[in-house]
Amino acid sequence: MQNVLCRWHVNRDLSPSHFTPDTTPRLIIDSMFTRSLHSRTPSLSAGRQPRTRGWRQGVLACLAALALPACAQLPAAGDALPPQVLAALQRAGVPTGAMSALVVSTDASAHPRLRHRAGASVNPASVMKLVTTYAAIDLLGPDFTWNTGFYTDGQIEQGVLRGNLYVRGGGDPKLVMERLQEAYFSLQAQGVRMILGDMVLDHSAFELPAHDPGAFDGEALRPYNAAPDALLVNFKSVVLTFVPVPGAGVAHVRSEPPMEGLTIEPTVRLSREACGDWRGSLHARFDDANSIRFEGSYPQRCGERVWPVAYQDPASYAARAIEGLWRASGGSITGVVRTGLTPPGARLLHDARSLPLSDIITDVNQWSNNVMAQQVFLTLGQIPPTQVMTEGRVADRQLVLRPARYERSREAIATWWHRTFGTRYSAPVVDNGSGLSRDERITPEALANLLRHAVRHPKGDAFVQSLSIAGVKGTAARMASAPNSAARGNAWLKTGTLRDVTGVAGYVNAANGTRYAVVAFINHPNAPAARPALDALVEWTARQAD
Image (tube, rainbow, N blue to C red; front, side):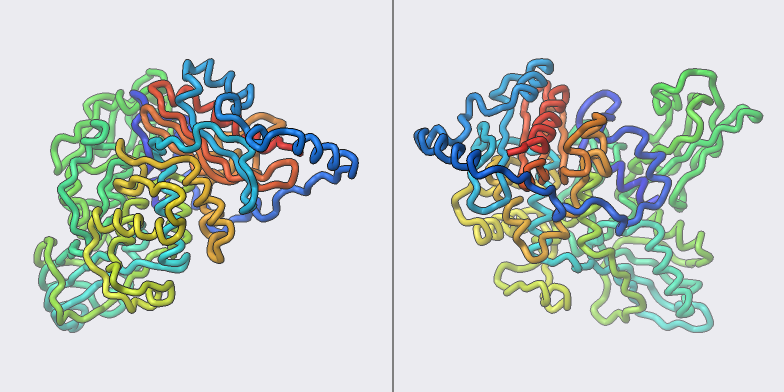
C-alpha cells in the first residue's frame, strides 16, 4: 500500500479528471507490486562515448568560431529554440515568450548550448522539489533518518502496560502502515499487549497553521493536498479497492488501513456501463467522518481498481489509524487515543527510524510526492541557524532541534542558497518546498547552476539518482516514447505541472558524450498542452552529436 499512496501524491491542478500522462491510472496497476529501491537502472555516470573527429574538422570549427564576434558565439534568446520545439509551441497556441529554457554542459567552464529567457523568474511547479531535496542532501546527508518515539510513564506487567503510551512524531515523511505495524510488534515483544491508559499522540515537533485541504484547487479529497504533520501517518489517506463479483451483481470494497470508528460500505452494485469516469459513477459520500458510502454503481468492465482518497477528517486521521491498526494487530486499550505532549520523564520503549533520506527523496522526485517534500522542507528549518551543522552531528542527533515552521524553513533555504551559490543568481522564492503553490519562483539559470553544482558534490549521486528516467520510470516514464528516441534511458528528470505551468529539469547524456543540465518551463494558460515542446527539447539535447 505504501507505493500505491506514494505514486498518487503528485502535484496536480490540471483538468476535470485531474489525470495527465504524469499520473495515468496505469500507475495504480504498476504500484500493486513492490518496487525495489535498489533496482538496476541506467547510470548517469555512464554517459555516452564521444565521437572521434579529425583534426581538420576541429581546426575549421575553431577558425569559424574565432571569425565571429564574441556575442555571436552564444545562442541568441530570440531564435534559440529548435524548430521541433517551436512547432510544438505553435500547435499548443503558446507564444515563445511563455517559455524559458537553458541547456548547458555540466562542465563548470562551458557556455550554454541553448539559452532562451533563462533569467526569467517563473513558477516551476513540482520542479521546485529539486531545490528542497538537494538542500537536504547537502545539509542533512543521504543517510539522515527521522525518529518516531514510543514512550511510557507506566510499568509493564504480564502483558499489560499500566500507564499511557506516548507516540512522539519526528516528521517521518513515510510512516506507512507496514512500518507502524513493525513498531507494534516490537512493543508487543516487550510485553505491551493491553494498555491500561491512553495513547497520546505528540505532534509538537511541527508548529503549523491550520490547513484547508481544498484551498489550493477545491479538491480536498485528493491525496496530493494532504498537509504535513510531525506525526504523518500513511499520508492521511484511505485506499479503496473495488473487486467485481459478477455472479453476485456487486463489487466488494476493501479498505486500508483499518480506521477506528470508520464504517465503509462493503459492497457496491455493478453496472454494465463503460469504464469511463468510474469514480463519479460510484456517487461516493464522504460528508460523514464516520462513514464512506456509495449511492451509485461500479462498472463491471473496469475490473479491479484502486482509489486512494484523502480522509475527509484529516485532523482525526492519525488517531483513528493508529488505534485501528493497534487493535487489528491484537492489541487492546482501555483508555482513549488523544493528542498531547510527551512528559519529560517518559521512558523510551521503541525508536522507529525512518527510511534514509536518499530513499525518501527518490519518492519525492520520481513520483512528485508533495506532502513528503513538505516534510523534508520543514525538517530543514528545525536546525537553529546559530548551531554549527555538519552531516555527522545531524546523523548522531547531537543538534537540539527546534519546532518546525514554514518561515524557519524558508530562512534556512535562503541562507543555504547564498552560502552555497553566492549572489550571482537570485535565490528562489520558496513557499512550502513542494511546488504546490502559486507563489514559488525560480529562474532557469539559477536551477541549472544548482544541477551543475550537484554533479560535483561528494554526496550528489544520491540526488541525481533520485530523478525519474525518461522512458523508464517515474513521472518521466511517459517521455521518450518514440521507437528511435535518443532520450530513453539517457535523461534523468524532474517534471512538474500545474493548471498553467509545465516544466522539466535534470540531466541528459547526449550523443556527443556530453552531459547537459536541461531546464525548461512554460507559464501560460495552455501550458499543459505545450508539454510536447519540453519533450522535444529533451530529445533535441540527447541528439546533440557535436
